[in-house]
Length: 326
Image (cartoon, rainbow, N blue to C red; front, side, top):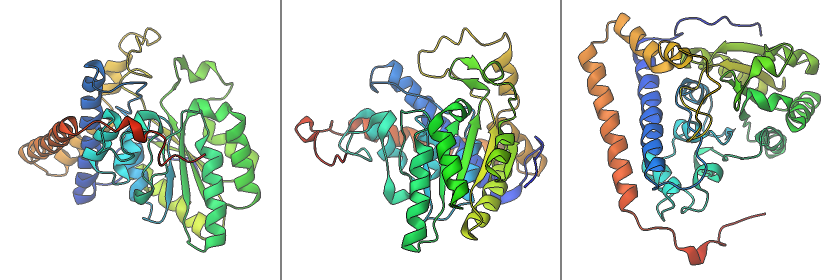
C-alpha cells in the first residue's frame, strides 16, 4: 500500500449523497450536544468530532456488520456511523433510561456491541490493544471479523499503541489501526511533539503497510479501509492508516483554544468534509434545493431525537451497579 495524496472526493453520485447525509447527522448531533453541555443538560467531559466526520463515515462504509470498532473518547461520530440510533445516543449522554447503556456510560464510556461499536475509552490509546485482542478472538471463533481501532495522533507516542502494533504485526492479526490526525495532540501542535510528523511511516518499523489519506474525504477513507480489511480477511495482518483532518472546535467543550493561530479555524472551515462534499455534489449535478432539503430533513431528525431524549426519565440511580463488568 503506497501513500495517497490529499485530493478531491473519491466518490460522487448516490454514494456521496449517502455519505453527506451521514456526516450531516453526526455534525448536527455534535452541535446539539454542545448546546446541551453549555445548558447543563449533559454533565461531564465531552469531546466533539466536529470537522472529523468523514473518517468514521468512510471507514464504516468499508466494514461488515460482523466487524468490531473501537474508538477514542471522541467517539460519538463512530457510534452513529456504526448505526447507533440518534435518540439512544442522546439519551446516554443525557443520563436517561433510554440511553444505549441506560445512562450509565455517558459521553466517555458508552458502548453498543449490538451495532459493532465496542465503545469509547478515556485512556489514550487503550483501544489499540483491546482491538488486537478482538482480532485474536476472531481467529479462533472463525467469524472472519476484523477489528478497527481509531485514536488521535498523540496516541502514537503511547507504549500501549506500540505494543498493540507490534503484537498484531507479529501474529498477522486482522486489525486496522486508524490515526485521526487533527494536527493537535490535545492542545499542542503535533509537529512540535515528533521529529517526523508523517506518522504513517512508522508502519515500516512493524513491516506492515502504512498509508496517509485525506481524512476529510469519506471516499478516500472507504477505499483505504476496504483495502486494509481485504488484507486482514486474507490473513495478511494489520494496516496503519493516517487520516489527515482538522477539528473545528476545541479539544474539549470549554477549551479556550488560545493555542490556535489567527485565521486557522476559518481556513479549515473552507476545506472541511461537509463543505467539500456539498461542492462535489453540486458539481455532479445535484441541485442546491435538493441538498437544502436533505439538510433540513437531517436537522429535523436530530431535533426530534433530542427532544424525545430530553423528555425521557432519568436513569434510576439505585441500579447504578447493575450491568457493570470488570
